[in-house]
Image (cartoon, rainbow, N blue to C red):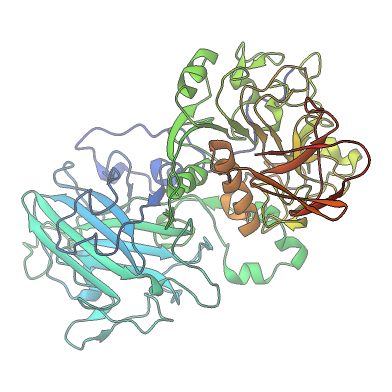
Length: 626
């Protein structure tokens, strides 16, 4: 009877974990239209660590310390690689024959890619423009993150595009002899050069068992002044990397001629399912109204094919680490900890980019005790809308169960509205059925009669002085497009920071502080925060949430909420001064509240600092709640 065992509609690219094939499998049996780790957002979304200027030494020796200390990403045919269905006589023996791992990093001016390749025969005997026939890596950059269904060899991207570097670090789009750009598949809008002190430079070398390569790209190759995109502080960019293997068995200067082609095998880290036909021309043909949502994507066929490996739509996502990192340990609760769906993969990478340590927890099939144990020692539990709402209650699966962490002294943020009542953040229904009045999701047909069943992009800030909402006031646009909002009506003790309606109804961002009374009269053991971020809402926005939906204000609210929950909000301050017959209250780092008695009840003062009050009348006490 309870809510939903599975929450928002997952996109067609949400897949079961791929069962790796045994070493030495026949790569000619690989189906290039198949789904697997290469198409799962959770497996193809990465943090790009921010490192110090000069930390990466371009010497062809890829070390973890240079690249932020994070674990490398390994790509192996028969395990997690998308494999090209050409040439017909393609061959692969084992991971030692061909496989690779890669690391990413960025500093103030540069983006770095480091590759370690296992390869039993190392070779390059073709000109730069044909490095795809040799031992080389291929890189695709969707600099603006538009995820269009294009072919970057033909689209002449002004920023980013498609390139190769052979195992020595030479660059496909550069004419070595002429010292000039060759071809139109790489950053055509930027006057760039290749060289040790120039915009692109690679250093590679053969090593025991294979080869290693490092390449540096100046960020200006990917930064469009008109778009204002900057590769830093949480910026999200499309990225793909693949490997070409030439074992000297085909034609060419060093080849034996035993095979029809130089290329033994080509495979990629990412080839995501994409809407075919999602081109700029298609978008230009839509009306302004159609562009406000993603419902028009339902008109396009989605799938995976060979073209996807070189398209913006087929790339994975990378998120750039912040210049000034935060700290804290977050337990991220989602429906799948291995291959997280919907916005989860991007949220995890964003939090890691911000500097937080994220531990993933799979709510599906878990037990209440397992969740409570996982929460111990964490500074925040963040609950995704992708969970089944009854997967975090005790008894598990019981629509009338109690939130498993109700009495756990750890801050909790949730944008899964359908567990708010189980946590007693909002009113319960006796039988555990959906309410859609005291909690729910806007944009759904069930709330249409309430006047909120339309897709929206804005909310109303109720307290502009709280650390979460600082700098924002009035009606604030938080989505780049129209979408739904999670809402819940908390108890009187909770502070409503934002609402769906101007009159304060349908709170979309609310905070219980430690010690506040929940709806059932129990006490919150720590911060409990309901977050506005929406989910699929039939019929208005029947598609999963995406991090790109959030604009700058929405992103600020998200990250401010996390920082505040962990303890990153400003330390509350409060001071008083007399000005004639008035008292001037200066405060910061929280919400100003007043009461007639020191024991309360306390109510918020909707007044910016410094606030002025009369000294006559009823005695008042003031406090700042951080």
